[in-house]
Image (cartoon, rainbow over all chains, first blue to last red; front, side, top):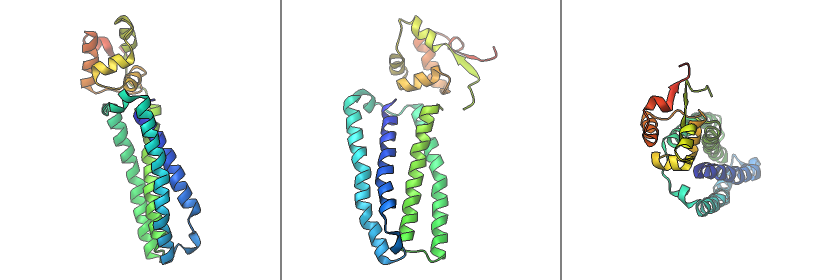
Length: 140
Length: 71
């Protein structure tokens, strides 16, 4: 498994832990109030920390274990995998943006709006990382 | 993923070249060991540049390393 593939697994784990906690712990009952929006803002801090800690620890750990691989530039296959993953992530971004527009039109604001945008980013990131891992495993 | 329409002799050529490892070949070509493994297994179709670089490492023409599957 290449250094970048390992980092993608770490990113996937961090995303699931950090934002899994965020969406499961969020007080959905007050989502459509200003307090709901502020709850989102404050909860994003620990969620980001939960996401970043495994990323930083994982990157440092794998860089120490395989320093040579950590310093290698992306080769052509890795660049293609990167592009394919980013391309796949575009679709949830578009869908999420439209979902937010419909939510706003239908009176879902504050916390809902923030959370739909957050979910859009998280789903797009999950698809980007997941697609890249798929191509690393299956070949491209 | 659809199988590639060409095969390669990289594994054999590595063996004949003093049992060169995938990592050594990757270093000389400028790609990762995993990319060499993917090319060998027919999971990745390399660019023409990388294909030529691989052939040059073995001192062979391109057709001796990669050949169309139905030939």
